[in-house]
Length: 85
Image (cartoon, rainbow, N blue to C red; front, side, top):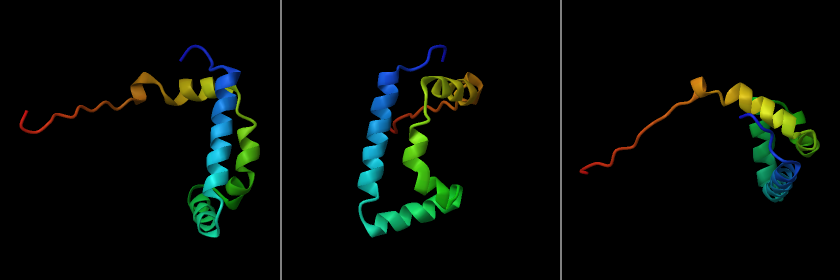
């Protein structure tokens, strides 16, 4: 959590997110789903401006978010133990 991701990684992630968003918004049923989903956790504006907001992602912002939210004290670790073994 000490060094930012590269611009190439950000660009690749944004390209994938745009493609997924376009694919998932292709038909009216999926558009309705996303509009309703966006209203549950944000606003209609989130859906309308998603692609534009992706362009604002920078390596520095990703690093800042990682350092804020991916702190070791916030981790939850679980162990799965197979039954009968």
